[in-house]
Image 1 (spheres, rainbow, N blue to C red):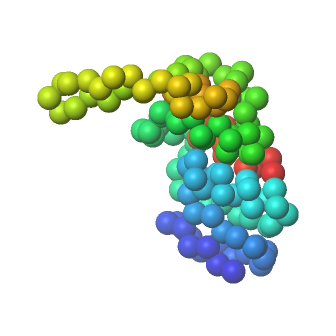
Image 2: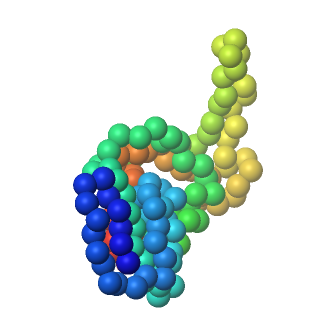
Length: 131
């Protein structure tokens, strides 16, 4: 098998069940879940982590994925800001009423996190690496 990089061709005779391209939250999650099912996985990422990225607002149902990945306790112990609601502001500056998660979800998952993607993504990537 050959992997093409920007600098050279790397020859590799290993066999993999899956090749995941990208080490962001989706790629790290896919790689970890596949590895947890006993699959041989390689994850390819072009950037050096930690790296800056936008998209730092998690939603309540992400709780269950974090739990499945085995990182929920790390999230609870993290310094990430806890988030209990969301409010939307339109283009003219008009704000919606707050949407409180606990009013729609009677579970611990009704609070979530506002993360720094550089730290969050590295946590998920390290978790995938550990699997």
